[in-house]
Image (cartoon, rainbow, N blue to C red; front, side, top):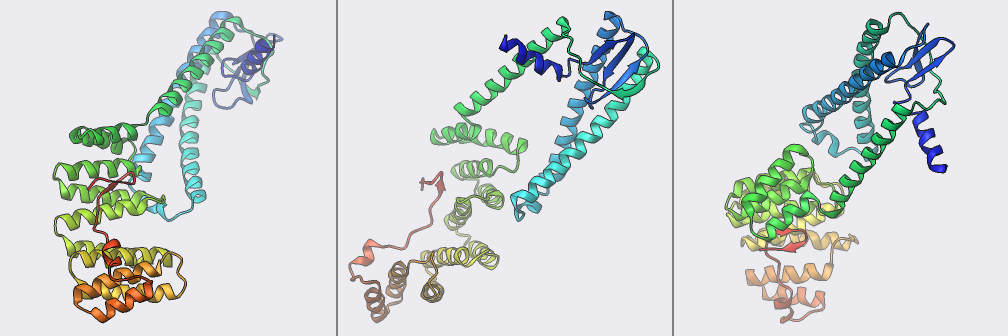
Length: 365
């Protein structure tokens, strides 16, 4: 009884409860405005009701497909090609923009479809007047059965889709292919994914790793650069570091240093700037530009004196001691070790790290 009442209530406000017959009048519900209806001064027979239903179903499908196509057009012609416009906005502003686009698309499509339906309805059934539509309590067995069937289908489809994505995501499939060394398949899968949803940084990060493994270094650099620009989470820096690693690996040192300078100049806060400065100092050490590295370590020490939370002062002293050792400054090495509370043997325990290639926080190279 409860089940029947719930279905009946849902049916009352569903698209399948589309007509009422009262006092030798028939009111057909508007296909896009459930509170509006079209009143005819006669009672429709079952065949006429069925013909009206076919028109409603046809126009609803056309409307749904039109909304989908227009939304894809807006997505791929406006939002995706200009994704950089959204990167510096808050989530609230981006949500408003997306909502505005969706409303424009929906209203445009439904208005066109509504006018077409009204013309078709006039041609099929004759003159009508616009009135308020009040859902009927009458259960038409034919359309009530269709309603229950459609509702069950919708629930089943949603359940299947949710279950599939809960079991495994396309990113997980690509990661498994990476771990199995099937890099050509990774590139194919991630390329398809990037074409479908080009603002997901995971596609480019995974494809960048696969391209690096097959020797397409410039392609890998381009993908990691795109992933870095797209990413907004706490692992964003990983894509930047991977781009720097590949440039280090192929000897494009000047290009890598230019990337560091660009990020340092547009850092959003002191901690972010310190992070790029520290990474640049380590990079300079690894390419044997010790004087340049020393200048940055001196700056980092001063920043640490200002209680910068990101900077670990003892670690900076140890790394600067490594630079002084390469430059032959024995006295400076001893002084930095003393300030760090360490001894000469500790230098081997705290080496300056080399650039590495990362994927999912695991080191692969």
